[in-house]
Image 1 (cartoon, rainbow, N blue to C red):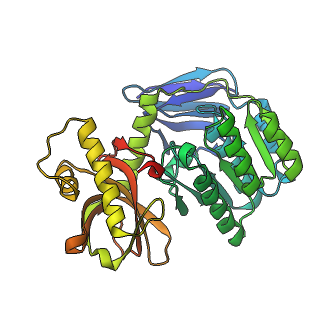
Image 2 (image 1 turned 120 degrees about the horizontal axis):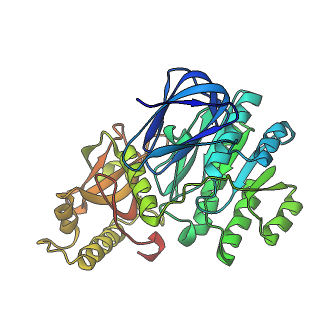
Image 3 (image 1 turned 90 degrees about the horizontal axis):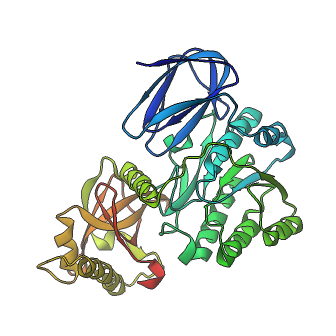
Length: 399
């Protein structure tokens, strides 16, 4: 396997799918110290900077579409490093703002790692519905860190909230309300050292309105903006007592096409569907509702039929059955309605694919890894394949 001799002060950027092993020397990823002989994996369409702190030997391996490059510099901007030095000045929530593929998650991971070093524990809050790192897509959540990590996407949420769509655009108020619930839970647990990785919706008046609402409920102590912060947001920050730092992006960013972002989302769905089995659950045994809070079984049935029928018509599929039977027909191809399961404490505990819904015979079938008793099932508005591919979607407020 290829081994690189790299000088101190350089950076090896890994482009996934790839892995690296520190053979000798000293190196770190976003201030997470690498352990000798322990392999670090970078997933497809992601990248990670390995900063060489002293002359080192690194073993790099990559798959198709992956690779690496060596740069004679630290790719973490000096302005980011300066913020890290001053972290103990901002006890409370730190929010990371920026557009799509701006380096937000790298900055949030760097901050989370250094908060762990300062306080022994920190929380990484993932508010990006479309490119979630620790949650299933369409949901938000947080994970508590007790040690540094090279990549937060290897972690799973400790607590999550369902929004139900891959963008906050049609569900602005619901996204904000769920974010407020997450912050409330963290405060109840006494976790003050938090960093929020915001969504990348930053263009246009609606995006600014959304962030105004979000900042009002989050009340961050510090906002780290990759690039300029709109004047409306800056004015609000002054009113609510939030400090603002405008920071440059890192010099190397892996821009992802829409197709790559969809594929990343598919991989995330697949991850949270891993080890699934088909469960048959009496409808009367659980509270069943849809994303808009509708609990009437006949109305829910109608919405499921509308979603399935639209998918069948748009794709010119020939399906023998109609109505709810059509769902069972397409389920034979591993297709179902993305749904959300809650445990007996009414906490969101996992996703599943609704494969059948039969009120007349009082049962539903759901393909899910969640094995315990279900208190509540929320039926979504996205048709998903069992391998995580988004096949058809309607905003829940338009069903």
